[in-house]
Length: 309
Image (tube, rainbow, N blue to C red; front, side):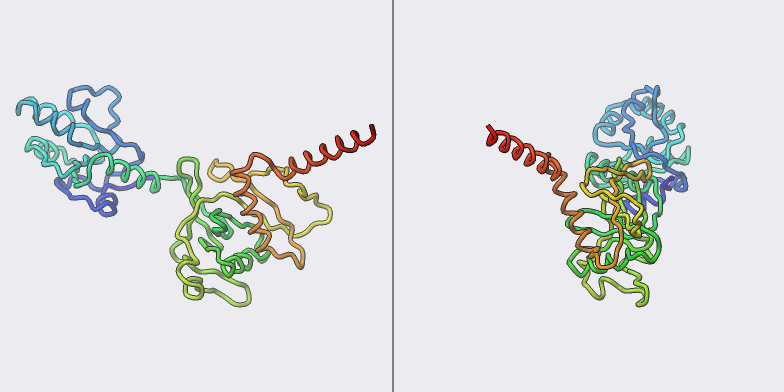
């Protein structure tokens, strides 16, 4: 995964001071502030990163004599860096521009202060460089919980999602879900072509925001829980107490999975709602329903024992 300098210029609306080679690719989301390099220290120089020159670095260069500044900048621009970005709308020194042109390095500028721009840039690069995969399923937002509904074709994933939308929940993606792993968190979204659309067998494709309003869809959502719809199998043993924790690894990130067996007459939308509510409850509660039942049984046993004596 890589991002070209020209994409950063366009997406972050940066001013180009020296064109340089805008086809260069950035493969890391970290940045470097080259104050030590301007001082002549190049051990551990992360030249593969975007270089940010803020007020401190600019002030250090400004305090130098012209001859020394020219010497330091010539050495700095000999290194193969993707681009150097000036923040706060700072005006680069003449030696800065000359050395950049001589080595075909890209110099950009933003009016934002350094800390805010660095945060914006790193978030941008984290998203663009994140590992990505496409999954077959439906992603919905139920009570604020991102739920990825999976299962074999025709089992009722889209119909369940449609019922959830009617009940006030929101669709993120149907059929194809693009998932990115960012800092240990999975973010799901819809491919552009099918965004806001849902396919119901026998009816065709439904434009969800056109029928249910713009609030019925979300652009992206964190994947918190996976609901696996399975055809009922009498020979299969299903979890009846909610104590069997099962996980699926997506992009090396574990996500809890709940398997729901499908039988005629089961209201899947209500079950998915209950799963979302129960998951949200489990995040805030230290006691599970099974533990509550165990505690009540212990109380009854102690009470019975006390009455016998």
